[in-house]
Image (cartoon, rainbow, N blue to C red; front, side, top):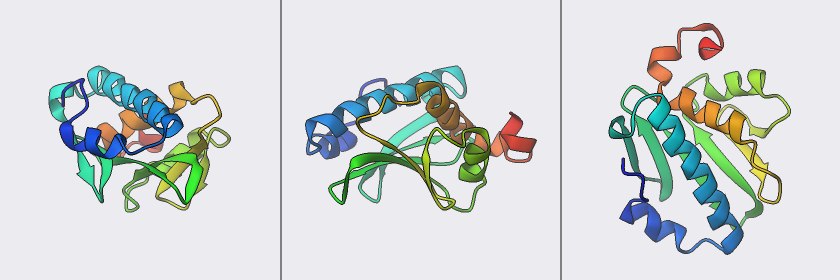
Length: 139
């Protein structure tokens, strides 16, 4: 993954309104930082899955970012629903996010991004297969 946005992802993001676009850029920066610190940028892929920006570490589980007009005030991150990612995140960060079952966490666009917690969640996903057998993914 490059530290600049891939052409595929940039094409999707250019259609976002200003506020979701700003949040995307902030959250993507957390992905870049988490990747640099945990698995390395060279071991992280930026692509589109289901038409949405997605990030995958070489030994990790996909993190997918989503903003939609159906929920215009929310920004969400989706995780593999067959993993224990959201369950673990809920245990670690009960009040930081809103949760959608075992697949997603969301936060309001107008709130400050809980960047420390979110970066930690992203780092766990990027290195998921190394952490999945550890209690609370090693936390």
